[in-house]
Image (cartoon, rainbow, N blue to C red; front, side, top):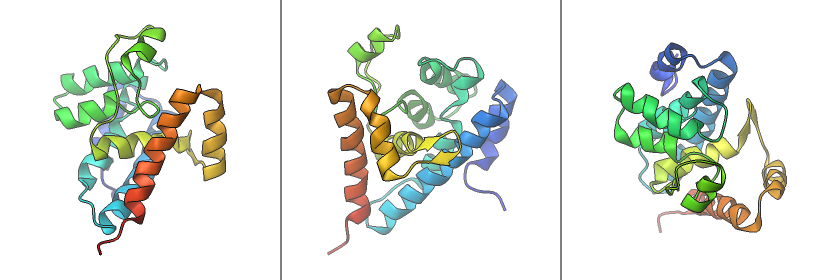
Length: 173
């Protein structure tokens, strides 16, 4: 049985993503869809198909680079393949909890904000933060991994996690 988004895996292969990247994308998709389903069950509308597609494709840029620019490269690849703009934006905005223009400039990237805006973008970014390789981090491991970031970036990661957790806990009253 195929999981949502599996129909896009041939695009990862076509552009040259290795098996490790594809395996990572599948796990991120599984985590993202689990989060999306939980949020929807709690009463907030989520485009689960978009979440699955964006999660499967989020690291397509790693076919050309494993640097910080893989999200920008991935957005270009997705547009060249004719993907919907919503998927292209998920790919471009998935790094961390997003990067502000000044932070991106510090990495030698084009100084434009790449902060997840839609719920679907936020879900994919957070799911990616919870997966290292093909291993899903527990809460303690996730928070420990944030210690390498400065306070402002760490707070953005935690705020994103908190926002999604609030939606997961929301109930229709």
